[in-house]
Image (cartoon, rainbow, N blue to C red; front, top):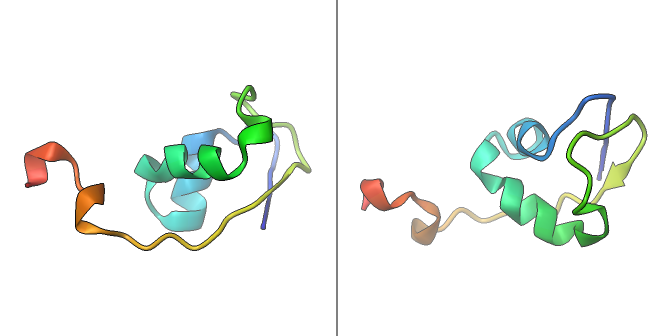
Length: 63
């Protein structure tokens, strides 16, 4: 679980939790009820399941 602070955004949270802002989409999928929020207020609890990095997670230019 991650508790938001004022001003958090999906990519910032992904960077804090997973050390990878590119996982913002994964984070959004696991917290779909908050999908309409762009900038969070303080105190929202988000589910932050572990993410296994796979070869598929690399951008196309890294193939």
